[in-house]
Image (tube, rainbow over all chains, first blue to last red; front, side, top):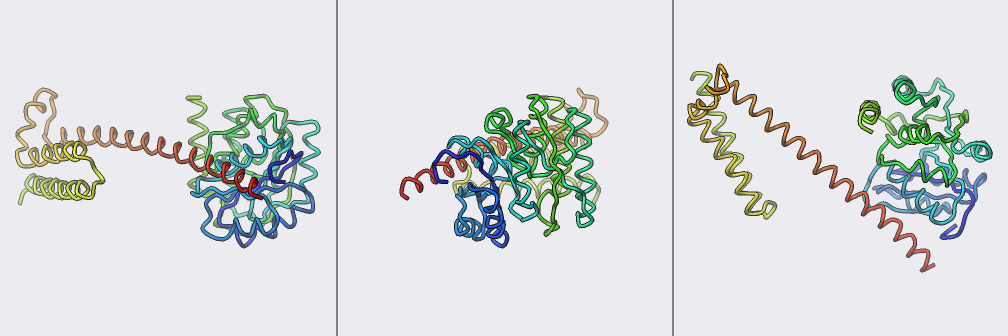
Length: 222
Length: 117
């Protein structure tokens, strides 16, 4: 896909995912032609593995956070003509076979939010944290998103210009939802399956508390 | 030794240690001459107050504090809050600069690689 106009692109921000990234890309290739990995300063061979699997790889020399990695990927994709952007996590928790659902959702909507069916395997602290964040989002901003922390999403390139976030960390998902609400973008929810492989990656309890604090701060000052 | 003397003693030890660290940082060129002088002035003021607590009496009387220690604690809080804010804004500024630089470099690098290929 290098430097060519593309229609749909899957963007995968990755940090220290050498064990999963090859398989994630291989499976994703069955459903998407253009796959872009943003290696966010990984200390392992994530970038090499991603390139070996056939993805376009952008590299942050320093770890900046998920929000910054996504923004780099989206900026690049939009600059090079992408019309549809799909974001996925690199740890294999999102099933690529659901990509067509996210693409088709954009025929009628500007942005589609993935919503995980809460499986038994989902750690209890994640369930509670996600519920608190999602409720706070509804209460403060009136944005109804069932799963505010799900990274499986799609949006149109023109919507990205309105969504373009400031967050460099895990607040990106929440900020995206807030901006979608503020800009009155037409949004929908896509129910998805989720596989939890690693309890220790992703949003921690402290990240969750920081997200809630930021939401309150934004409500008061922005 | 009375409580007051202990506090004075700890203040002197702390102030002296901080002066040493400031000096080392200056020697390693991690602090400029002016920065080192600024911090030295702060530590000397702390040492002075620790050795002669009565030097605060002028302010304590005017501000109606009961004890010197109360005044010192309140003042310490203000200084800490000020420094906390200053550190926060500096770190944020650095974060933004770093983010801008790293993201720009990533985008430029991939375009250069694409041209080469």
